[in-house]
Amino acid sequence: RGVGKEAITLSSSTTPLEWISWYGSVTFNMYGRELPQTGMNEEGLVVSQAWVDDAVYPEVGDSPAINELSLMQYILDSFATVEEVVAGTSGVAIDRIYGLEHYMICDRTGDCAQLEYLDGELLIHRGETLPHRILTNNTYQDGLTYIEDFEEFGGDHPLPTSESSLD
Image (cartoon, rainbow, N blue to C red; front, side):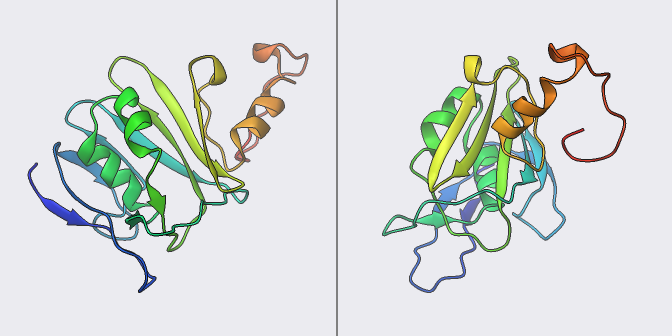
């Protein structure tokens, strides 16, 4: 808590987003400090990511920007609830440094949202538009379409047992 942070960006014309952490967190960082793959903050907010080839981030423009992994640290540092995340990230510009990510965020009340960037727009699946809490290496809609074939989700096939992302 109380640590000043600055996003890592690659473009010299991009202004990095700066913030002060409000909450402490525990994260799993495969690439380095402030670049988490998943984590939870002291308020019980959890965020995780998955690669999705269809991701297209909006143009950065003149807004301060953050990379796709540091966005997760920013969320953990800045918000206690999914409601706050949804309100506080809609205008955040992503300056991609590596991945094509989408995110699942849940809070201690059980509220969850999936955030994905498709066709340069932020899509937020939450409430009625998030009937199943799934995060695969495919778009949320592709995941929903896929699971409809299986018995537990209204279809007539048994659940698959392979290790593919959709399964």
